[in-house]
Image 1 (cartoon, rainbow, N blue to C red):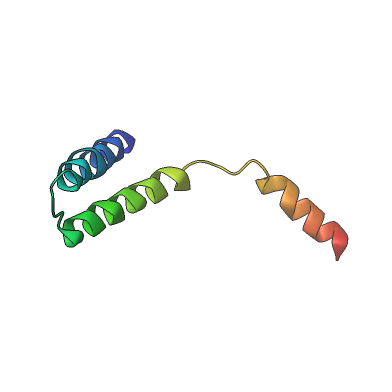
Image 2 (image 1 turned 180 degrees about the horizontal axis):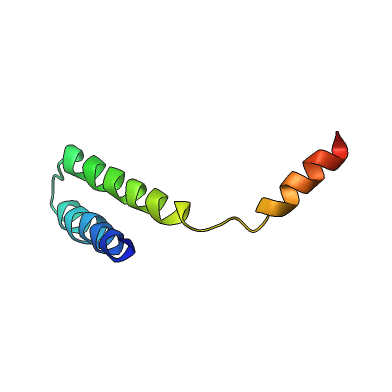
Length: 65
């Protein structure tokens, strides 16, 4: 799944976005679509990475109350 997201990100921004951007009058909808796919892909990739301070924040919150 992670490899699919890398391919999706590369296709959305690398190919669609760059080719469309190089045109004299780029289509806004294609650019917005490429940006949306890129942001969705980044969200999916970052969702799987655990936070550094996940356990520490819960312990600090309990001590303050």
